[in-house]
Each structure stands twice: as C-alpha cells, then as structure tokens.
Image 1 (cartoon, rainbow, N blue to C red):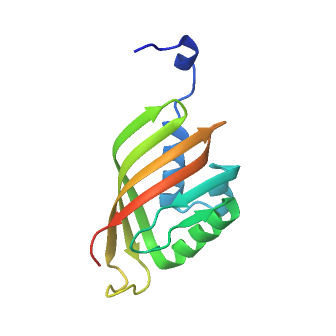
Image 2 (cartoon, rainbow, N blue to C red; image 1 turned 90 degrees about the horizontal axis):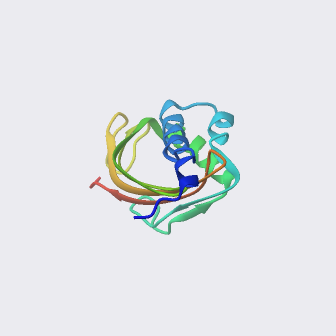
Length: 140
C-alpha cells in the first residue's frame, strides 16, 4: 500500500460523521443539526420497509424530515458496529433503534423499531456533503 504524506495530515472524516449522528440522537436544534451538513448536501435513502420508494433529500428536506421524525420517535440511537474510511468517504455499519412516540403499524407508543444499516458518507470541509443509507428493518 502506498500512502501519500499529504493524506496523513488530513482531518479524520469520521469526526464530522459521528458528530452528525450524535446531534440526531441528542435532538439538538435544527440549526445545530444543519451545521453538520454542507449547504449542498444530498441524502439518499434507498428503498426499505418504511420508505418503499426510497427518497432523495437536499438540506431543507432533510431537516424537515428530522423534525417530522422527532414527532414520531421519543428517541433514537445509532450503535456503530464497524467503520471503514477511504479518503473523505466513511462507511458505517450501524444498528439503529428508535422508540416510538406514537402508534406505528402494530406497535404502541414506547415500543422500539430496529434496523441494521449501512451508511456511506462523503465529508467536505468538516461537514457531511452526502449520505447514502441502506436500512434493513426488523419485522414490525
């Protein structure tokens, strides 16, 4: 493997990615959450059980979705299982758990949803500039 010396001086791209996930967990203000993202961020959710058609969001749609999520969930957690870094790209294997604030499918408020996720991020200037998420939800 050849490592270029300038690559050794680059900031760790996992830092802004983990800061972004923790901001979601901690339910920081939408302005603070928005500070984790570049203005031209693109967030792609691949088709899954909750979003069968998938979705692509810009920054404003992503923040609006986060706001909606706060009304549906009491809390959510991102347990990082593994991390892979290649330059300014970060791939995470994550176990996501959300506690419902409202009824969903056959689940009552207080019940949990769980998903195994692969999340691939691009980082630019210390902020997330793209995210692709592959969610595999447990049965509900």
